[in-house]
Image (cartoon, rainbow, N blue to C red; front, side):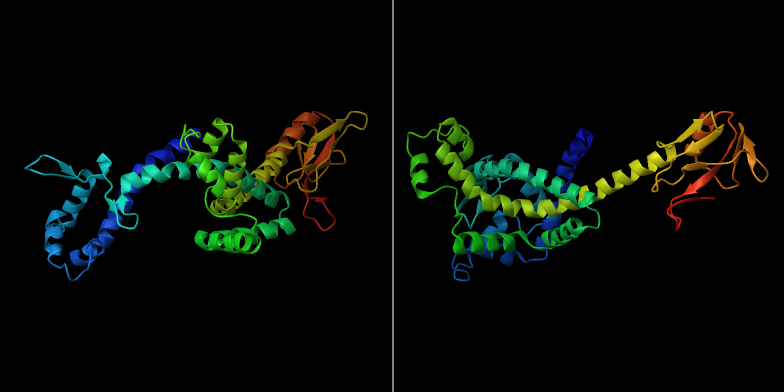
Length: 339
């Protein structure tokens, strides 16, 4: 598991690099005027500002030059100041938020991290539990319901599910409300008496000894946690169900090959007796002493049918006692028969 996580983490830079190249290639299909129109006010009245911005951001140069300047920035030859460069922490300006992107991330990342921490546990545990229940009740009512939930959860967009939760639990039932805190508690955390140790609301509430603020913050996280978790529940359900079924099949196959319910020899009757469950292929059933029509090995008669490894192990356990071993077939109409 550790190696798997390390490999995934090592793939993150490669994935980000490929995504940025793909975005730049798609942006290259737009004209420089179309790309700058969002950042020019009163366009086309200020159309004279377009050529200046094109020269400033090198939109008149090849796409690979634009990509390199976006990565490392561009140094002004006169002042020596570096402009831009995501590798240096300069992510540009957000027009929608009306502030630099770096400041926007710094201000909103603690709330995102706080939500992610409290979402991880129900996301993983509930998803695995649903998958195990579906595997245990294979083809049953629970399994069928889990399959429907998996399909719906994978197909329904997250923002649509979030709007449905707001409509049901906020607009109609009035159980939960949007936002991070109630109005009264918002005034408390904005006061000087409340100390922001970690900038994580729930943890700071605990560190300040305000369990009422902690409970209120968790109550406001219920709908965001459900919105973020349901699609992961569908994914965990499918993966866990598949691997649980595969693991159970492998265990049954291993027991069948090794003959865990194996042969028992009775010296009194000098015959080998075997007990094989109905769902174990390759089991044994032992009967009369060796006679005509079979192959002899260690005092036992083997049928001409192929006998697996588990059967050979039981033959060696039976030693020199006379008996005849046949291949056990659990798929017979009589519930199990010997060939």
